[in-house]
Length: 453
Image: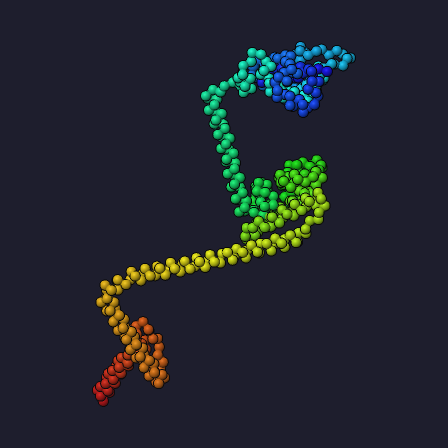
């Protein structure tokens, strides 16, 4: 049975006839070894027909139709003109080898031409593609490359292509920077959630909830369908099945689970995400220990669904996480202790150095102004002596007052005097005035009484 080969290239459709296949055999390995040799391959495969495309746009349309499995009118006319006619009711004595099974089925349906596409045909087409420029006459060496690549670019088009390529590179670099920023932010805000479900999915959950606090307030059932609100309300309205997952579906754990266990895995993962978000929201210190332990639990649950291995209990996992955090805190304290002591020592050394500088600065001043400092010292000594003398006098007066039964009233330490003494002086002066006034009155009375007698 003869085999015709349909080969579509950027320049046009070509039809080859493969004959004398018994010489090299029907073995694929032997064909693979023989296609590289043009002399041997040229004896087996011959060019039957070739039709070029009218333009570059026509070539593009024809290639797109072939890739979609659609036979165009140009291809149908080309095959009907160059292939033997198929008589009705009789088995054809040839077959058409194609690269795409879809286009082969369409050709068989429309034209009743039998088609085949297997490894043997593909190896023959590979040889045709390798030596295609040798089969077509009057074809220069660079014509085929030009037809495959298209026409030359103008300077303006080349500038635009370079600008678009640079923009794509800038966008990819900007995306990388955004991802790095997201990773650092998630490690600061929600380290446990990021360690459990990833930075991107965790950031989407926080963004959809509004904040980390709002996400921590959500129950696990709400977190499971967060992002699928439309599907949920549509299911409630139509009384259909509610969605099993929302944004959490983008996690790798859901993709790794089997179809029957995706809902269970989503529910379990939402539970762990709820715990991780609450830990991140209310813990005082940032740590990823809890998130790593929760991730281990999810991995164990996956193994349980696939292999039947029993996972650990939640209490045991949380105890181990708590012990790990306590150990990390103690290690951090031990590391910080020597650093703090060294900082204190350095501060003390700086303070001593500054005091030494101040002392060095004060010494020459004291030397130059020695006379002034001696005078100040003598004045201070005099003031101290006066204070002591005033205090001794005050003590003597207090003793005398105690003997007379009269207490001192209002000692003024600042003035160094007694208020009571002043009061006594004033009272004595008032008594003398009263005595003089009474003596004068008595004299007047005596005089009046003498005149009356």
